[in-house]
Image (cartoon, rainbow, N blue to C red):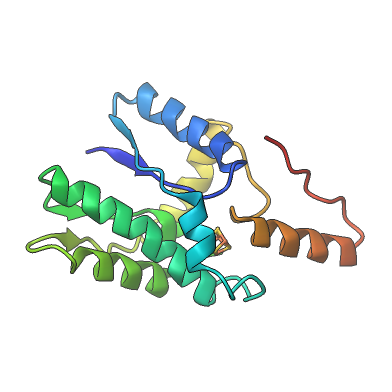
Length: 165
Ligand code: SF4
């Protein structure tokens, strides 16, 4: 098993550091399959104000899975999957659809569309996050999600999420 990760926005580096630390702890090789941020903005152009879980997120998932599928294909993996769909903030079906689409680009490559929320998966995620004291990001990951989160928080009279490098 290997952990591969790709993200498009700099604050995600904190999350990347967390997953690297976690992988190291359990001796799981970590592969940084990061990708081109400029390409992300290019592919999501015109979708800047789409709501979360909409078109922009599907494009975003596609980019992540395309990169992962390429890595899997080039490195002789037959199956890949993602735990991204475990989040209640994500549309599980859309996540899996993107994974399946990406796998179909290569012969014999399979996306394992496992539902990680089942069999206590969601609860386990919360437990591990607490135990490992994972950094809890208050927005999904891109600049647009940060803008929308802060807009919502402003309307609710809550403190804005601070952007940092
Ligand atoms: S909200 Fe999240 S999934 Fe959607 S485009 Fe932004 S980073 Fe990607």
